[in-house]
Image (cartoon, rainbow, N blue to C red; front, side):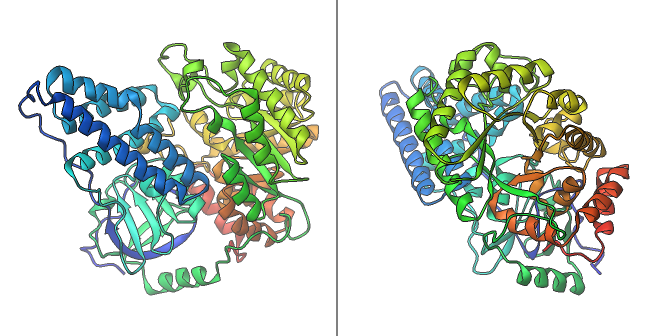
Length: 563
């Protein structure tokens, strides 16, 4: 039992990457201090100061590109995006203008320019807010480079430890070593932040929105449960022994057989990927296919939409990794909350509810049609079984329209994502028009709970165990059973083995997740029958709160193991 002086457990933390780990707390070093304003530079040195700024930016970008080249998958994509931000004219030109016009020092100019960019992104909300931490990270790296030193980054220790931070820059998260960082706890962040995504891809248990976590002194041993969100200082000996045993039994090996329950009910275990490198990693991990291929990587950080030839080559690289297996391509998911110059139509007061996803085709239908044509051409040249789905569909008319466009492009299997309460509530109507549906739990949760998923303070609301969200998943599952329409889940919630069991019990037939989570989910399903899954789902669905739903499901699981 912990002493009375033990630090308080953080309030309202949310688990975002499953697994349990125990280790001593190590704090992440703080970010750089805000530079002082100081006296204006003389006009005769301002040009040299601009040169110094651009040289520092080139060094920072180069360092990030080097780190990106040494990684793969989601980590590489995020590092490359951060490197691009270090060269972003919107940031550097604004800083240079302040130096030339006002005589501001380069560090102060960078600080102010970054603040303006971050404020703009935060005001956009939704996915644009994800870039705020990237901007601040690049800001700190630039200021450090200008001062002639390198940021400390993730602490290095000889023994494994639990990393505790206020927040963690994507570029730092991407280089975490699971051999030494056994768990991650941050005071900020949400279930869909870059920190959460990379932690899941690395298999590191992680908890976010853990207010007060930095109040736990360094060296304190803590239990971190990335499934429940528990952060417990000074765990008892029995708990320590149980966690050590779990780690020894863990078997992160490629899938050897298709996913199924103990009695042979098939459950396809698919991968979420974002580029050709991710496809290769997923195929190596034994994924049965791809349940979510995010096609945005081709469209981001450019002034014009990619041409057909470029798209075909990129899609073929992904499809080639899965001959004879399913690859579900999500059409471009962008818009006011993930701005692209060739889709821009001015600021929106509430971009998360604005023109995004499929809705961008209202303004630029030719971009969607060109993408569908490129997908069809790539599919004809490879052996993968291609399906296409559209994001942010809310009505039957939208579903019919996108299916018609897919058919016109020569794509025989077209579906929609269930991300809005409207789509979930009228799923039976939508299923009459489509070949399959896939539940995007990230957006479905944020829209159902009316809580921006990028606000750490609301992370407890953005919990896929919320009863209202489970009820909508159940409604979609029933509609799928009634109409014979395949229902999948492609949100990262599928990586939680207990929640995966519940989803199967609610009628979900395929689960798409980070490849590293597939073996644990497969083992959980193989330990249960289809009837067990239904029984566990029923008790979870009957619970009145998210915490009680998880607890009820875990209790109903009984002695079965989740690996």
